[in-house]
Length: 332
Image (cartoon, rainbow, N blue to C red; front, side, top):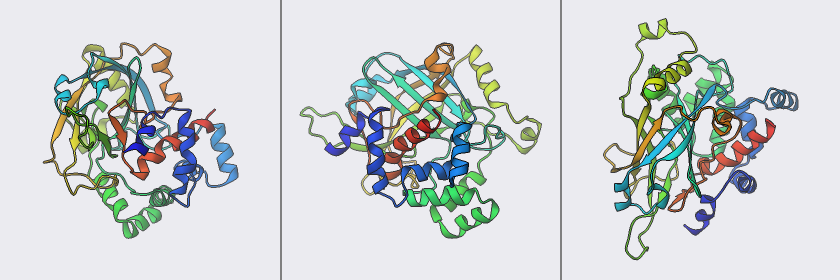
């Protein structure tokens, strides 16, 4: 666990050092992975992408709230950061892909969070799909390039990549939600959590994040969806929180012996123990401050972690920060 502990302190600047090490895990460089996401596989399109500040999750908006840790978590896990009062939150809700005009009628929903205490922070990058489409960087590159080829590329993935097929099949049956507030959000990557013990010798335990909406989940029927316009999600959430906040319970789903830790294409059984970590409250009360209103210009660093939480060896997780940093640099 020692070699991962240093990653827990990673911030925007130090994440640059991860680029070379993450690249070694794949024949593809971090720059090539960003090109695959952006669809900029040649010099001309890459330069054009820089001019328009091309990015993933292009359609989205920022808002704010707070996180209220659950005191009972400390009975099980030793995470001092989650043993305090309400902590300010910056949130970005978005859709996937580089199309800033993507219709809200598509099923994907994403929630990224910065929970910033006085001395430590905890960032989240979550999605409403509990499994990822690739377990390694080569398959990630293949997925991103093939999916942009249209029906032929998608069919190739269905025929040749079981992880991508499982993901695409799940998304195909996922009905769009009427609100960001009525979606569950999953952290598909695993982390290690320090367990409570009197002598501090207990082995860390692997876990994944799950956000459960306190108002319950909801889905639009085909008839309801047909009546919606292509841009309903932002207005709905901002209108909702004017009268009452959107809220989620945050759980840590714990792995058991035999569970696969470093593969985000694998979900664990629902029977696994879940510990309540706290409550996320999105109320928009800090939306006017620059750190919130301009949050879309920065990155959400999933390995910026407080003491007691460290990254797993998941190659997708450990490529996220250098890839986000590469994308950030191109948008400057």
